[in-house]
Image (cartoon, rainbow, N blue to C red):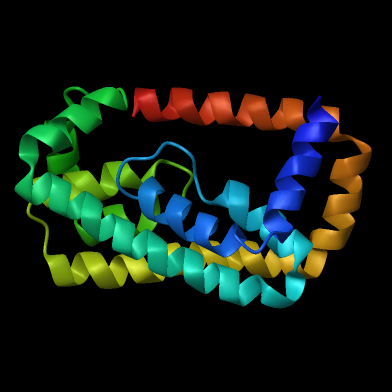
Length: 191
């Protein structure tokens, strides 16, 4: 079953609809969707390494636009912003995140945007905190672009060897991925 799922993901990555899907997932992940765009970006770059930077740019653009949507949710639709934070396990996170923005400001965006911690937490709370929009946008471009272009570069140059290794030991790497994902979820809940 795992092999079929992997083959399906790689087939989707090679389809003509893949860029639109990548854009949609990248946009949605920055404001409300739980799946990071890396799950589409990686197989797309592995399938077409010559388009790695096009995909990274598309991912960055969509992520920043989605970040603006998340910011708008926090800024203009406060009850929805609170509800989304609650849904993500941060029912009382508003005060904590506001304190982070008050103390660290720009660094919250720059550091959190590079990590696998859901970026929507940053975007919604930046809006709730009424963080400076101009700073939010340029920091989002830098941090999200840095993350996606780094991933695309690594996959472009080391991807074929990585792909061969993953295909050979798919079960092992899936188990490791699940453990890492659970660890990240626990870390996010603790923070």
